[in-house]
Length: 162
Image (tube, rainbow, N blue to C red; front, side, top):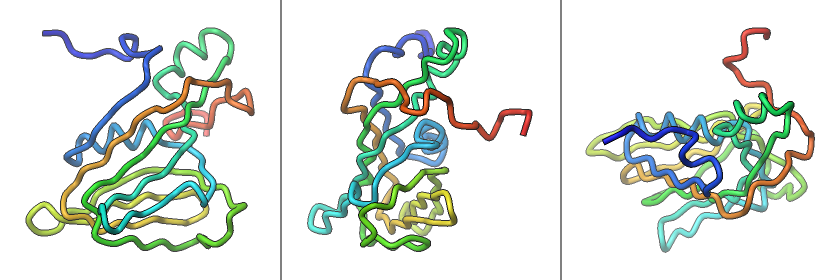
């Protein structure tokens, strides 16, 4: 059996699920620099599901775009956290429907018996904190990729010339 490679899925919708902290590191890297209006996040308490419709930068396509001279892409994707018991946020107002949020990272703080908190860190010191019964985060592309409006790649934190 061969390991998966970025090249194998470059032109197909991305579908990733994180069920442990190691999986979540990969998912977090894929949503880094994703943007969304405040109005595109919702919690369904009855179904215990929190969702965000994000516009994520296609980091998996970044090396190809660099080689082609900068045809960078974004894609709309659903970020869904299941088994959510509670939602809290700080650093921004959920009533400010014109506000655009930018995701920096997603982390997990384990509690007892697999429960814990999923933390979605946002630019500008914002955070969405989800109390979860267990870690279950899914990312699914829902549109075709489109040219990034800025025409540029976000500055990646691993870039050396910071």
